[in-house]
Image (cartoon, rainbow, N blue to C red; front, top):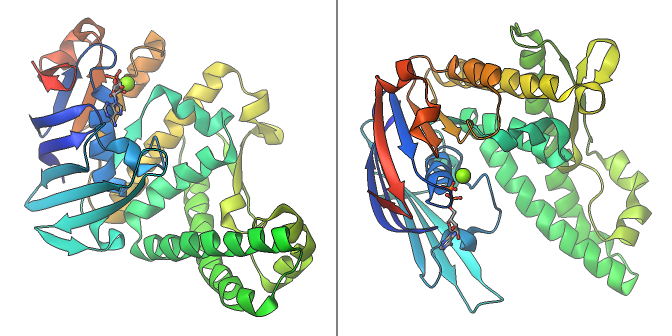
Length: 351
Ligand SMILES: Nc1ncnc2c1ncn2[C@@H]1O[C@H](COP(=O)(O)OP(=O)(O)O)[C@@H](O)[C@H]1O
Ligand SMILES: [Mg+2]
């Protein structure tokens, strides 16, 4: 599976731009702020149905425009995402439409038509950042490989928003009306347990896999959502106005030997190796689960990583499609450059 053609309209800093990618390696060269990461963001959107940089979709639409489009030809399928921005500055809303071959689809049926693994220097956050970054790591894999997971996440996130709004109201009024909660408590329990179970399976796979770059063991620090746990946190939830248990509070501990968390005990070098190892496992898992080689997206890895590390990252390039961005063509090893299609960017335009 690979993306042949990409067309962007009013997406980020692009007014209108078309790209043809090689089935093997394509190099995007452009100065800072020319739109390299925006382009990678668009390609990743096709695989995951969302941005890896923001939850606020209106930011994806070009300033002063109403509708952004990401259109792509991936193998024999035409994929399209429309992001529609509505309302006034200050209270913008947005919604998305997903289309496959011109037909409207639910997000859960749009995702799963194209696969990608993203690697960027700030992926170090998976190790040293907040728990949300580690949950994103799991979600980026499971969302692409498992339709039931996509559906469960969709229901869970909606249920959580509504339940949090009820808790917010309870906090304000000092009164919690039980019958308002019954339905949403059940929804969170049913969908939350599905999510936990699937994350558990994935973590087992990651732990059982061979790790050539750096060995570690992942401990799933899960926040189970059940009737008992909700009862236990009942007062604390009203006091804080948010839901305190469930997979939205999960974390991972990524441990070196003797349970030393790499976050606290690892050297920066080990932390970077751990990210790379996780990314290799991600590629392998998605390929195994979908019978498709995901497109590898390497965004600006040459600016921050040292030479040895870059070499290890470039070793990830196999026979899958790869899209690499860089500020300077000279950063790319000659051997790779010979086999690479080069696209030059200047401020949202191909040059
Ligand atoms: N919604 C938007 N409308 C217009 N420009 C945007 C929007 N979002 C981001 N940009 C612009 O995109 C540029 C950054 O693009 P990016 O892809 O991150 O650059 P780089 O090539 O350095 O990776 C910035 O100049 C930013 O102002
Ligand atoms: Mg960038």
